[in-house]
Length: 259
Image (cartoon, rainbow, N blue to C red; front, side):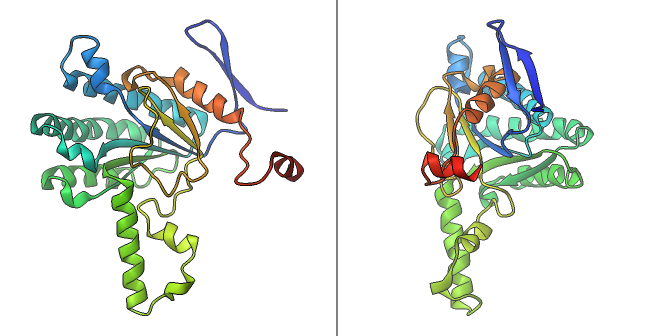
C-alpha cells in the first residue's frame, strides 16, 4: 500500500505527498528576498534576514519528507558585484546564521557542505564556514548543500581544467573522457543530479546554477518570494514533481513499458 502524508494548506485543501516517490535531490534558487522587503517598505537586508528563517523551515521540511540532498543557491559569483554594503551584510548574515544553526543541524542529523569558489571568500568567513562543515561531517541524514560564491560556468571551467591537466599528465586519454569523468570533476562530485529544481520569486531562468547537473531535472517555478516559502510550498512542489512523467529522452510509451 502506498505510504502518504497529508497536510492542510492555507486554502483548507489537503496536499497529499506520495512518500514512496519523493525526489532524492531538490535544488532551490532562493529568489525574492529583496523584493519581499521592498514590498513591505523595508530595507533589502530585512528580506535576507527573513530568508534565513525560510532556509531553516525548508531544511526541516525536507528532512521530514526524506529528501536526501537539498542544494540551496545561497550566493552566486555574480552577487559579488552587488553594492559592497549589501555584500558585506550578506556574508555576515550567512556565516552567522550557519554558526547559529549548526547545533540544530547536528541534533537533526543534517550534514552540511559547501560548493563554490572559496578563493573569493573572506578568510575569516571561510574558516568559520569550514568549522561548521567539519562539525556536521558525521551526520548521516539530509545533506544540506550551500552554493556560496558559486556559478555553473565557474564550476564547468574548473572541471575542464582538471580534466585537461590529467590528460596533459598522461593520467587519462582525452579522447576517452566519459560523462562520469566530467561529473567527478564537478563541485557536486559524489552527489546525484537534482531531481527537482525549484525557483521562487516568479522569474523564469536558471541563473547560472547547476547547468550541467540539471540536464533532465524537473523544474518548478513559483511566484512566492523565498521568505514566504514554507513546508506547504515545498510539498506543493514535490506533488507537482510526482505528477510528471520523467522520460529522459524516451517516449512516454517506452517509459510505461519499463514500469
